[in-house]
Image 1 (cartoon, rainbow, N blue to C red):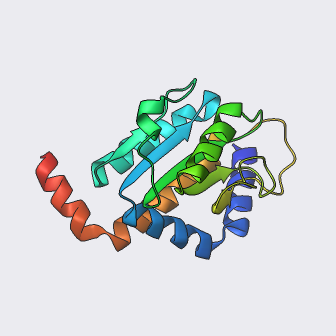
Image 2: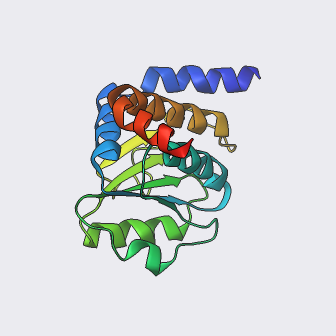
Image 3: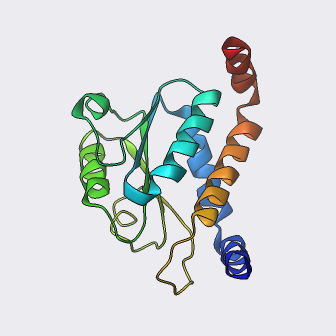
Length: 169
């Protein structure tokens, strides 16, 4: 618990509010959001997918082992791809990012370091545990970071979210 507390304190110190707000705005304005979350990051990606799907339409998620070309072939310059990628980095994340770049989609990377393979390809890179030296990556910092993004979306897009909630009910 102490180690998790240190990780969350580090996240608080390193978080860049400008990058968070840019990501929030991109996610609100996108015509579709594709979440690429592979391997061990799939649990956090699925939580984000489920939460975002409650707030807006056109949200799609990869499977834990890859993505379908049918799901990504319609990405365009109004689309956003959110990729969660942590050590041991999965090649599927890079393949998805490269394809999304060709389709002119915006890429938001949630990763552990700015210079991670996916961080170097993304338009917006939001990091967790940048200064932490550990062989274990904490899912709590990833979920906390996604919670911050969700809170920002709720703050800025509350009218559309309320309308969607009414439709869902």
